[in-house]
Amino acid sequence: METVVLVLVILVLVFLLATGIGELALPALIINGIVGIVLIFLTNLVINPPIPINFITILISAIGGVVGWLIILILHLLGVAFL
Image (cartoon, rainbow, N blue to C red; front, top):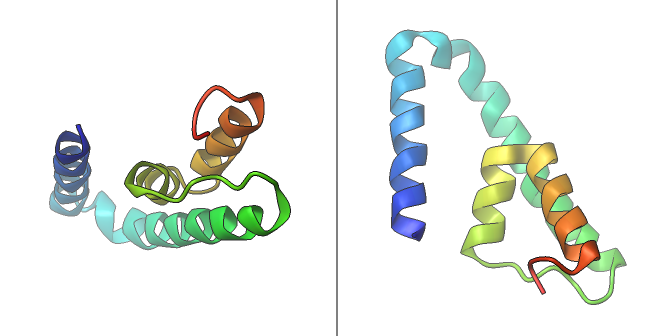
């Protein structure tokens, strides 16, 4: 499953770079991904029990950025996922 997600992410990035949209959108996506990952680490300093940091949570926050972090946080607080 993780390999399939990784391949899809790479294909999307290649598509963005090939169409020219990537020149404008890629820096914004990178900054958004970094902010999402930093937010997960900062959130773990505050909440108890912390969100487990694994490949899936990092991938979701790197791709989704702030929105991905918010989804992870809500699912964790509701006890649906990331326990």
